[in-house]
Length: 435
Image (cartoon, rainbow, N blue to C red):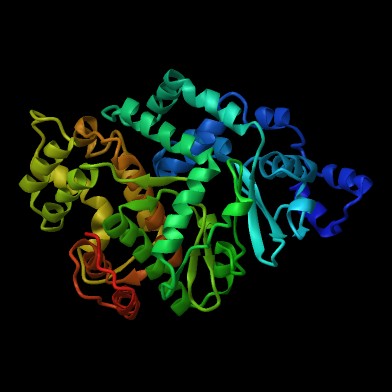
């Protein structure tokens, strides 16, 4: 990208220098944002990220198309980012902050991150949203019928496309308001304050607004940097932390981050993992959690009839489907292989193979696939489970996953040193699991 070259040129405050810096960027106006995200690309990009667990099971040409639509937008020019800061915080960034780096430290799908120093000396990460994005993507989100048709083209025929799309639209709309993300991040930061191995940066509320989100700056390794340098022990520790964070949020907090993207993890040299980007957060509605979880017990017990009965209650199967219970169990238990043995090793090939098998329309599971649907409330949870599995596969994660899960699912005693450390933290804080 051009901006990576520009970044090496340094920082200056005069107008000529600002203009020179802007030369390296394709996005300089709100109209450029609309062009980059035009013709539904913005919605498909975000929806594709949320549904990316299906990519490995799609035909090659469909996969290439969806991947191209998911590509991140080019970073915006420094002057354009500055205009957003001035609009949202009331003054140019050079006046708002003691120090401001006009060159983005990172670029994402709907915004970019700048490093800055507040007036009281705190080093911070300032996420700035592309101007006009709420209009560009917001109008697309209003065009529900078009999104229904797009998703129908790649979804299983039995899938509740309308319910699925409505759930995705609601979550994507939430992402456009950084005030909602700030609230979610603050909730997680408070929940995990002083945790032995989980970090969530605090939000700096006085420097945040609808299109600007300022958080503590974290000096840590990115996903790629960690993979390039971590030894086996460090990888296994990080994998368990990611797993514990996901399961703890689902089972104990009831509010979980629905975007397990590698860019949303930072790895500390002290063995901690920092979790960032809380724009796509799912909060259980009354009855949702209780409707989904009863399937797990009979599934783990390999009780085919019990699984089918609970799936009918939860809306995964309609009564009168006439499916063979063993066939249903065989199909739906595939993603839970890691819980059927005392220890299990995740691999990239295994995760991709399971996904391909689940989406093979003409395969042995065709009849089950034809009649199986996915309740809308399960969409984001499924995204989290598959995203986490893909990350664990890249780490070659090996552990007692069922026993660790049962710490959160059934309040069982900890089975690893990390589990013991977390339990001691809970006790010291006077907390007990919510579920």
